[in-house]
Amino acid sequence: MSSFSLLQTSISSSSSAFFANHKFTFNSRANNASLPAKPISICKCVATTQAEKTEYKTQVSRNGNIAKLQAGYLFPEVARRRAAHLQKYPDAQVISLGIGDTTEPIPEVITSAMAKRAHALSTLEGYSGYGAEQGEKPLRAAIASTFYDNLGIEEDDIFVSDGAKCDISRLQVVFGSNVTIAVQDPSYPAYVDSSVIMGQTGQYQKDVEKFGNIEYMRCTPENGFFPDLRTVARTDIIFFCSPNNPTGSAATREQLTQLVQFAKDNGSIIVYDSAYAMYMSDDNPRSIFEIPGAKEVALETSSFSKYAGFTGVRLGWTVVPKQLLFSDGFPVAKDFNRIVCTCFNGASNISQAGGLACLSPEGLKAMREVIGFYKENTEIIVETFESLGFKVYGGKNAPYVWVHFPGRSSWDVFSEILEKTHVVTTPGSGFGFGGEGFVRVSAFGHRKNVLEACKRFKQLYK
Image 1 (cartoon, rainbow, N blue to C red):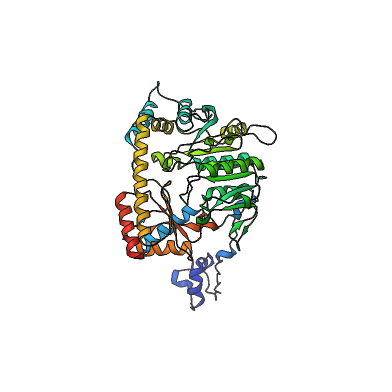
Image 2 (cartoon, helix red, strand yellow; image 1 turned 135 degrees about the horizontal axis):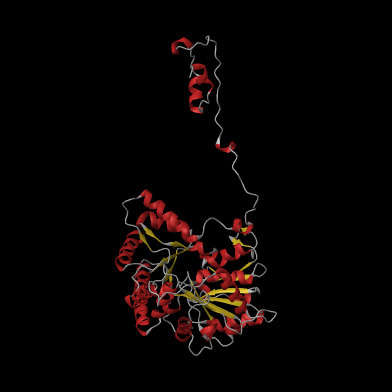
């Protein structure tokens, strides 16, 4: 190819700058070309900036409700900051007492049952495919007899699932976008975020750090972390967690009786989250159905995650009593069943084998031992912060310790602790405006890590 032809080819933007700043003389004869030499103009190529590039876009609008959400979901954001800290301090021995993820091995009596079920799937006699979306009958019966004995809950009131968090979103689909909701403030973020996604809320109001159209039931040390129901407006749905995440508080029988009556007076439905009921030390109700009349106004969701270390195995359940009816008299359970059958193919059969083993006498004993281990961790954490002069809440009835840092930003405290001790906690404001000034410390950790973290806390705040 001649020099002339070469110059007619495309010149990259990086080369164009070079050619533009240099004067070249070409002799076609140098390459034995037969064409006569002519003056040649140099073309300057201009690179297109990223902003000027046209990207293909569909004609599908983004869900405006998801666009309302503020930043990322709390726990992935904590994980992101932990990862950034490790990049900054690659040799640091980071201890995580933030995200409530279990750390101790699943008891062998439970894993052996899962292994047996998994091996059976390799045989003609033991293989099973799709199961009942509501869960296997033996497990449903075991849940009813173990957690709801003499409470009027039957096995067909129970829907086995892949966890309470997943069921919360399925329940939101049942309720739809036209309901109003109330949440404890602070509270587990899934209640609010799923409500926003469903379109039940207004826009986020930055001045008060709340979403419109949500009734925030303030829970503070002054009211014993139980809302003053006289000041709470009527809503269709009331999300309530006891023992509570994040505060670690547990509602008394008298308080839950007030809550049930409040729901009856207002024609509301309580979504009761009892995922930490087995951590209860006080003589408080472990189920909302211990309260007379609750089956007419409440459903309950729970999980094996924090009992048996099933955070990765995934297994939970929701109880929807037959007596719970919509305003037109239609059973809530029938609509929930339809959503379950439409959106879910049932919990893993291997997980359900593990769940059944959890509820055997040996399994219950093993679970209580693991729970006891975590409760000992809470005692260590509580004693540490109290010795440093902090006001500390929770820990007795839940695996979370709620530490007060008055006048300080929760995220600032989180960052201070992470930067100076390499310990991950959870900022209280991530659970709502009512959590500002608090930090949640999780008791889920190996004993040596909990002891080391507490040693670092004492060095920081002594």
